[in-house]
Image (cartoon, rainbow over all chains, first blue to last red; front, side, top):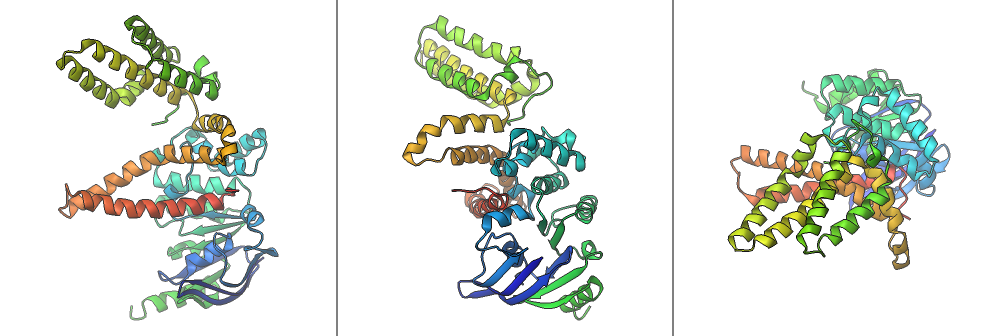
Length: 227
Length: 199
């Protein structure tokens, strides 16, 4: 379970998150909000990429500020722009990167890379240079590189923003089929209809926390009250 | 760039990356130490034989070496015009040897294997406080981001052209710098998120 306990995040004088307290046992959690509302900061706190200025974030009881190494094994993170997260030039080498960091035996690394490539129908791309992939293929590579580490939670920071409709659907299907808990930050509201819980952020606070039907209506009205 | 050729797996594909890197380093240094034209011809012959013996796709190899070939031709022409035909031959032979061997290396070796080999070679540097894993990661990132940066430059140039700023170097360099720094920041987050431990 994900817990936020009176979490405040400041960057200099700017308060980005203001005393957030949440307990999230759900498996599909969405985060929406205007630009600068604090939702990406919220996502980065989940993986321990940043630590709260005040309060604590706990994942299954582990404090993200104190147990960073364990948290990164437990929580995967898929960024908005896959180009900025692919480390190795070739597809299969990039997927293996995280596993090498875990110092797993070579045979296990190879087996897990094969399995994730097969799962997403990317076997034919395994030797392809990452820079020659399409936007959708790059995002699937980024997702594969995270999932191969078998995290319990996967955080997505605007995963479909740079994709065309076909690839948006592909990524949406991949997220829907995940056995893991998924926390998705997105402006793509169609992606979130089947989620269990939606948090609406505004000015560093959660201003609505409900099922998609209620929270997304609230968000639409908040963003365009005159439309 | 760094497109490994797997159309046919040959003996050269199976040679360990460390051995190939060593051969490249030794041959690359030795060819600059000899002046004898027969020896230089031997080096060029060896360098031509390597991609041929690995059955590398000729078209792809020529595409890779084409920019370097133009440079070599220009240098050779310069020395000929200056009345130094022997220097022209020597310079051409040396550069051709190094470039052909380097291209053969990249076509027959995975980047991860090269990085692993360099990490092993860099182990003695630990005594100077240099982490071999960081050397390897830096190398792989450099290789990975060359095409990304080229694409970024193209994108920015196109955007500035649309605004009537073609030929304005500052208009390309400034956004390139800002976006590269942002990219570096995001990349550092992504590497940390995937369990890389800098310590």
